[in-house]
Image (cartoon, rainbow, N blue to C red; front, side, top):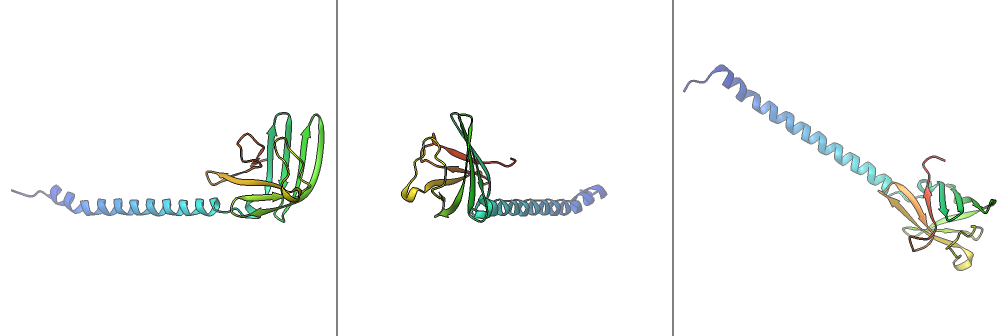
Length: 150
């Protein structure tokens, strides 16, 4: 059986094709791992710096805007029945997913103050990226969603 020039060239080119596929696969795996680590770095961050921002809640005819500062202070505006109420106070993180607001926090329908007139909430992240603060254990209670643009 005679071996032609084109057969020899094809056999020599096969290792080069395999090497390119291996390199592509290695690059894809490294890129995937890097993207996963970057996502995890953001998703696992529940610090004051990450939580700071503008949050909004709407229930019935009440709208509440909450501004959380990195230094642990907040400002709140509640719009109901054509009137606007303003307050400011402090907030702090508690445990893994808790947040506590000082007694200055304005009452929103469905949420009562806890011990020492502080308001307790639970911090959640959707997809590890989008913050929300739930002030009750039920889903029907007041929930503040972090606004990307306000």
